[in-house]
Image 1 (cartoon, helix red, strand yellow):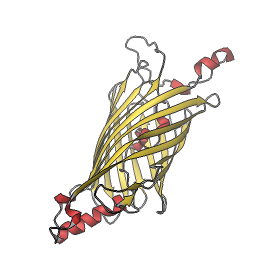
Image 2 (image 1 turned 120 degrees about the vertical axis):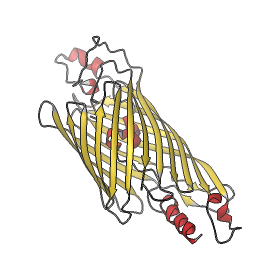
Image 3 (image 1 turned 90 degrees about the vertical axis):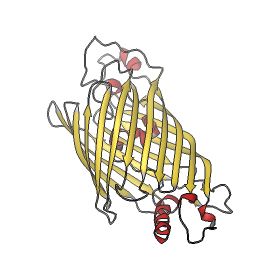
Image 4 (image 1 turned 180 degrees about the vertical axis):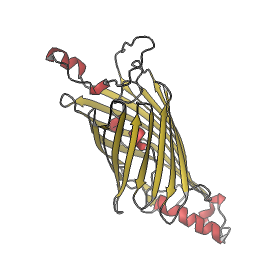
Length: 333
């Protein structure tokens, strides 16, 4: 019983205390839409991602996360492509400037994007379900530089299965099941070209209290999370490119944490890399583009902190209405 109480206390701390409250991902660099709503509609196809993450393998009550994300450009025109053609270096929305300015406004006119995210995250007796809808607006700034702004809104259900725990006192009020629904709101900005991107975003900006039904007071507070993401694409040869990137995450009042990432992309089909999460873990990443529709990504994390446990994450990507048969995203690589 004491073990269960200690486990419950350990699990509750990061969820309702000052630690990170949102799920953790290792392959966000291939799905930045998870962190920044301004990404919605950035490519010329409908981008769908399904993922499963098992964290701290072998630890009782360890986190498990599943998500489905989808976003697309709105009111896009049909793009012709010759039968069977494959365009591995498609310019997309980051296309090089037309020499004659008479065509420039048509090629670079602003676009709108929309998206959806469904999330299920479980941490011991605590469970989080989330559904959010996203809108984004993209506009050209210069010939090869674009900017975007986006907002996501939705609902989050927080549940705690107190009845699944054992307590010294069987009549302890903490042994009951409780849940609550609350709105969530996120916003972000994104700056991008054919060789770099940078973005800032904030989630849980409402910062509303989390009060479970039946509680006399607050069980915790939903705290705002802030993210900065940046990457640069370096072409080493015609087929090989290196992509260093960084992600800074801040949850007040904790100090900011930093992820350092490096990926190598070969022939727009195969990629591999490594990610270091400051004072926490090292992740080994790999992915494969099967064709212009399907792609796979895998991450294996090994802990460098006192936790020391390993984690794994799998991502399946599906590109619908990919008329240009793009193998590598033009703006997110």
